[in-house]
Each structure stands twice: as structure tokens, then as C-alpha cells.
Length: 484
Ligand SMILES: *[C@@H]1O[C@H](CO)[C@@H](O)[C@H](O)[C@H]1NC(C)=O
Ligand SMILES: *[C@@H]1O[C@H](CO)[C@@H](O)[C@H](O)[C@H]1NC(C)=O
Ligand SMILES: *[C@@H]1O[C@H](CO)[C@@H](O)[C@H](O)[C@H]1NC(C)=O
Ligand SMILES: *[C@@H]1O[C@H](CO)[C@@H](O)[C@H](O)[C@H]1NC(C)=O
Ligand SMILES: *[C@@H]1O[C@H](CO)[C@@H](O)[C@H](O)[C@H]1NC(C)=O
Image 1 (cartoon, rainbow, N blue to C red):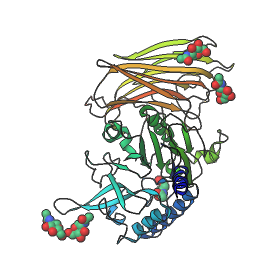
Image 2: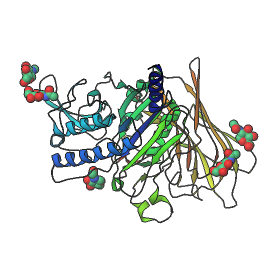
Image 3: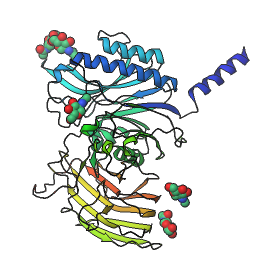
Image 4: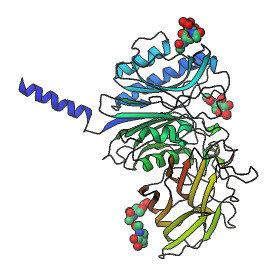
């Protein structure tokens, strides 16, 4: 009997993996658009249950589906798609058939399932309102958590969620998770407030992110978040390449890119990885089918990115890199200074690199409120006019790049690395060190032994600022058509 108990205990350890390790699945999902809204949701729910089944074969314990995954993008008439989501603690039986199907799949496969949907609810005056909501089904099919998107983006008919809502949950595999949705990642509430106590080491990010070069590229925003905050990030993006939506990944708290997918070909894709502080790219899926030959490939063209660099607002300095000599430069805009230490092996063909510093309001056109700060190295065309564009090759080998700044330690101001490569993939290795001394915050981002660097630096945001910049000034990242 004792022997049997010991064996069972051992089996339990093997089944659950090592402490602090679990298996996560994220789905890059291309929604079906069927004849009616209810048929659309039903068809996509069916696809979800197939993904849950497939993820189970690879031992996934949690699976994440993207924002707007069940419906495709909905910008008007949310009432055609919205459904009531029962309170936390409800289930595992539901009157809504689609919810029942998802709960059955969660229960049958013993998996935590994170789904985003337009939620219909009543306000205090009994008026019908709509939220952009993630809900989590636990491995018994009950509703474990709900989160309503706070920072809406071009979703005028939706109501923002409350800033103080609970967006965390505990699993029976001993991991705590926090979650938020898309545009939320650019705001302190909730993207940094959720993890501020240090208790949450796993973050779920559902998104329908519209790709924008150079700063807000999906995989690089996701990876930068995980690196800066030392959390595991499960990022699931809706796929619609003709609209520039796509790019999902699983990132480790140690900075490793465990799995990612981005492609110029429209499709859904299941990503699976073990996640834990010791996991290094154990199992990696990549997309890039359309990106293999970069120049003039039509598949690549079908993945649309907003792309433009207008340097007018930035302090810019051209640098001369020479092989074997460390280049040390300091570039300031007003009082905000960026320091660069760069070691490179320069190719025989001439390539132009410039350094930028920026501190000010993001643009009105970009729909992003708040102040941004940027320190970056970027590649430019031979005249130095067009910079940080996907179509400019960068073949210089960088032995190491260190970008450093010091700033007043303002509340709700946060920083993360920002990178860009020609194939829009994350850049490794990537680290960020931060220290606070009195009221000065020091931020350092670093990479080594890399080529194909279009942009490398740091990006800071604070949502509270009221600085106003004249609208005649140009923008770094222009025209966010739909960045959800
Ligand atoms: C994909 O994007 C195109 C262009 O914006 C749009 O017409 C189409 O409805 C989108 N598909 C889905 C499923 O959202
Ligand atoms: C909203 O109110 C209507 C009628 O007053 C009710 O039928 C419905 O269940 C309510 N919805 C929620 C989410 O409470
Ligand atoms: C809202 O509707 C419910 C049920 O329909 C009713 O019990 C409640 O009194 C209503 N509240 C208001 C503020 O009208
Ligand atoms: C960067 O590379 C140079 C040359 O290889 C080396 O001397 C320097 O120590 C490196 N710096 C860092 C921070 O690794
Ligand atoms: C640098 O990177 C290349 C390939 O990207 C790799 O083969 C090489 O081992 C790396 N060198 C060092 C010193 O890390």
C-alpha cells in the first residue's frame, strides 16, 4: 500500500512536470465569417473545440484564444454578436449552447480555456451595454474569472471595464495568472498594475493587433513586455493578414522566445510550449512561410503593416560605425538623454545608421494618449531620409548594443525594449535592467551578437501626461488604422 502511494505520488509529479513548470497553448486564430452572427460564433466555437482537443494531445494545461476570435472584427452593431456571460463561479451547465460546448471541452480535456467575446450586460439603470471581455473556464468547465477591456481602441459602442476589476486567477497547477486585452498593454492600468505586487508571474494577452512599423510591431511589443517585466507572457492574436492582424507567441520570464508565429499567409496556428523559469526554447514553432525571401514576395505583401518614419519631431544623429572600435554617443532631446555603446563589424557595403531621442506626446492621429520616450538605433536608406523601414536591409554585425537612459522616477511611467527586424521576428538575446536611486530611474537595454537590426532601443510610456504637442508636428508611427 505504501509502495502504491509512493508510486502515485511520483506519477503525480511526472504528470504535472517539475515545480514551476507548465504547458501552455496559444492559438493564432483566423475567424470564419459565416452567413449570420450566430452561425459565425457557432462555427468558430467548433474550431476552438478542435484546437482544445489538439492541444490536449501535447499536454497543454491552459489554452488562450484571441480577441475577436469568435466573431472577427466587430466595429458597429455589437448587439448582433454580444452574449451574456454568467458571473464568476457559474457553471458547468449553461443555457447558452456555445458556452456549454466550450465548457464541455474544458472539462473533458481538463484544460483552462481563455476566450474573448463581446459581452452584453445591464448597467445600473437597466440599459444594455457591451464590453470587450475575456472569460476563463477552469478545467471543470466553471467560469473562473472575467476581465473587461479598459482601454478601448476604435470601439465607440463599447463600455470600458472598471479600473479596479479583478483580472487574476489561480490554477490547480499552482500558477497565478493575470490578463488584459490588446491596447491595454500600452497603459499602466492594467498592463503594469496587474503585476506591480510581484505576485503574478504569468500574463495572458488576447489581442487583434494591427501591425505598425517601427515601434508597435506585434511580436516585438509582446517580447518587450515579457523582457521588461520578467513575466511569462501568453499572447494570442487574431489572424487577418489583409488587415495586418497577426503575430502570436509564448515568452518566458527569462527573456526567451519559447514559440512564435507570424506569417504573410492567412491561417490559424496552434503554438505550444513548456513554460517555466528554466525553459529555454524547448519546442519552438515559427511561421514566416511568407517571409522566407524578403524582397518582392507577394505573400509578404499580403501582410500589411503601417510603415512610415517621419523624423521631424526627433533629435537624430548619424553615426559612423567602425569595426572593432566601440562607438559611444549621447543624444538628447531637451532634458531627455539617450546613451549608446555599440560594437560592430561593419560590412563593405555602406549602411547608414542613426540614433534618435524623443520625449513628448504621442500624436493625436495615432489615437494613443499619453507621453512617450524613445531611445533607438535605426538603419536608414543611403540618403538617411527613410529610416526604420521593413524594406531597408541591415547586414552590419553588432557584437553588442547597449542603450541607456536616466529619467525621473515618475509614477505610472514604464519602459520596455523596442526592436525590429526585416522579417518582423523577435530579437534575442534581449535584456532590460532597471534600477531606482532616490527619484532617478536608470534603464538599460542590451543585445549582443546580432545582425538584421532595423531598430533597437527602448520605449517609455506614461498615460497620465497632459503635455500638448501641436498637431502640425509629424508623427513617428503614423495612422493606426485599427490597433485593437
Ligand atoms: C479581415 O480584414 C478585412 C479588411 O479589413 C475585412 O474586410 C474582413 O472582414 C476581415 N475578416 C475578419 C474575419 O474579420
Ligand atoms: C438585463 O435585464 C434584462 C431585463 O431587465 C434581463 O432579461 C437580463 O437577463 C439582464 N441581463 C443581465 C446580464 O443581467
Ligand atoms: C432592472 O430590471 C430588473 C429585472 O428586470 C428589476 O428587478 C430592477 O428593478 C430593474 N432596475 C432598475 C433600476 O430599473
Ligand atoms: C561589447 O563588445 C566589446 C568588444 O567585443 C567588449 O570589449 C565589451 O566588453 C562588450 N560589452 C559588453 C557590455 O558586453
Ligand atoms: C553569434 O551568432 C551566431 C549565429 O547567429 C552563432 O553561430 C555564434 O555562435 C554566436 N557567437 C557568439 C559568440 O555567441
